[in-house]
Length: 390
Image (cartoon, rainbow, N blue to C red; front, side, top):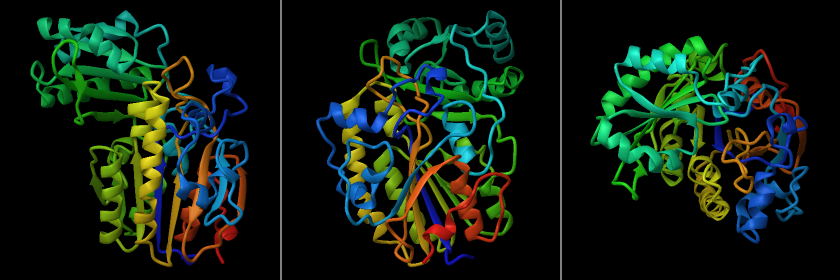
């Protein structure tokens, strides 16, 4: 088992560390989430990430460089086309896409919207790229008057459906999304997202009953391979949605990043082996997409402050990986994801520290490393397990 009995992946959603070489092709030239947030906030108070070696990663200029890093460190390049949550998580679990999901920068085609209305039995409005909070403010009052669903997209391959919980019950919204998911397989859309909200005009707010309906991964994932070996796999946050509830022993839904950390610690107390896979979504959803640099900085600092609670309950046979799935630079004019490198920090009480893992050519190197630790092999990725084992 390579000296490791339990692996923990914590994905800081939207945590990028500099533009990828092909970023300009995605209109993301110059993006650098971490450095730009630090500049906007006039510095970051993240002593635990500094201690692990975040500032030593190539291309990171805004974070203090420690002389004695507690973890091994590096950055990972996305080999798949695209810059969305599904693609990033799938790649780190060993599945690389050959072509990106379809996007709709000019809005959804009329024919698609007609099919949506016919097959769901619900009229809609919107149909354009928009900020989720912005379009609710724009169309929420009309939605409440007409009961027409608000549909919108972004730079990512998403079909988002917003409805007020008092106008369209959440279970009805979920039913519509399930039908839409089947319909949009014909259009190669990555995710359908239910976006319930509450409140009144001028004070609408989205609730925590969001639900994602993605396409399934087009290949076998690390999660499925581990489950086939009868090893527990706990998915925390939106991991279950991302992997279409496949390859998971148990799912823990979360209210926010603090709750995600609570659930991670809970899972560590419950499962003594296997994989605990956590997504902390607030950096992306609450701050990155809303171009809120100060809010992003504050959330990153709160996550950092709680890292010692996680490392305190790790055993000698554990390895903790901290990474991201894409960038979401809140300082750019766009409110969308950005095509960036993501950090990789590998920490374990029984592992080497201070190893420079360099620039990994694919996120799949993370999955390959965990697979090797459990005697498995994935189709993609180059393991760095030997680099970190004592």
